[in-house]
Length: 256
Image (cartoon, rainbow, N blue to C red; front, side, top):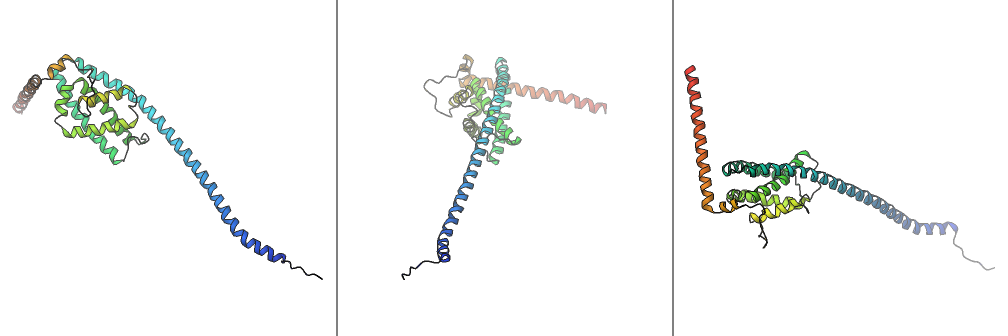
């Protein structure tokens, strides 16, 4: 009788499972991990898209508000141009620029402290949002003033290196926000940068707001004469205030 050797069923099962189960478990684990990873990636992608959409919509809302603000700024500046009194214009611009650059300096400090980059999503925090809008709006407005009153602005700007550094920072910030992209306000920044020598003048550069009076003021002697007159006027005004203040004090002492 011929005897054939057969593996016992228990041995076959044991040997096969001992080699198969360890292979199956890592494979299933890997497939499960991949599935989790794909779901997580999809969730992150969806969140990024939602965040980007939210950023764009908030920026678009601000850009519409910015247009309204610019109209108000230009109307105020139109009134200053029509004043047609160089002494008054000098006095107003003097105060205006000092205030403008103080706001710009304070706003830069807030944005730097918050590590706010100009191409970041539009800020939702009120303090950062205010600083952001102050930088954008004041830089644009300074461009308007510089183009319409170039001689007066040069008189201040060319002598103040701190203002120069602030303005350059503000311009870089504005150019990266997307607020000015492709619009007339971008042209204002470009013209202002050329007028003040921040960038080289293009061969066809002209300041569209320069008038004949600006050309007269462009001579140092004429402008210095205006400055001397303004300084003289200020001293007279201060002297009148002192005279008016004296009698009131003296009367009150007499009454006492």
